[in-house]
Image 1 (cartoon, rainbow, N blue to C red):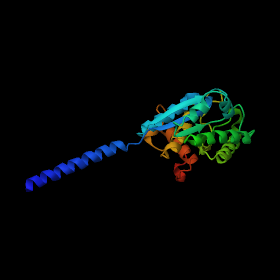
Image 2: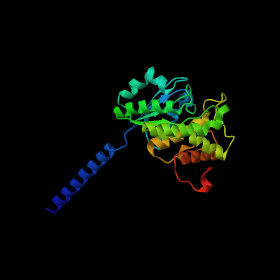
Image 3: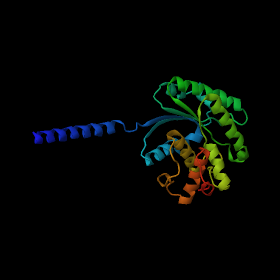
Image 4: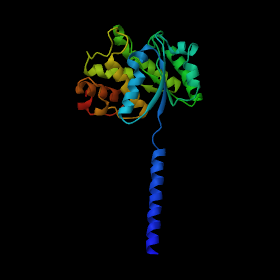
Length: 248
């Protein structure tokens, strides 16, 4: 009888272990599904793909679609193309919206708020979390970046959308390294470093994840460059850093 009891106990333990294993499989994090709406500032260097790479480097999966056309504003996307039908489909967890440059937000912040709000309302109707990605003016008007940052912050508040502060991260980089080349040669679009900086912000905001990690270093760049850019992203996202770590 004792041996039968032991066998029964072992069988019960094995059953529990199998059930726990299956439960573990069933509770693995599902992919995050993100729709990106913007223009060539999002399309340059394929920002969504760079975000997906950061997610993969930390063991996460990002599934995404990009609806981005040169020169399109959110108003343009509302009136033409695939953005509204894609968002209304309801298959996305998050929509990341980027406006301009056909209407500069520092020239007409109310315009940015209006169209961000329309898309945010549509997103919520579809069960999607809305987010607004702060970008930057062209290099010739770099001094206007604080106004761009302020306009995007006000628009996110008006729309009830999350703010993904890539423009603020660029500011933080330049406070530490004023000549860091975040623009491409045309002075409008981001360089590889500029896109990496924006991707860090988007990744950190989407997953509420740490952005300071060796796993997230930019391949082909010096480690100190990646550390500086990661520290700037953390600063923009409101993560606490000691004074000694604010520039990487």
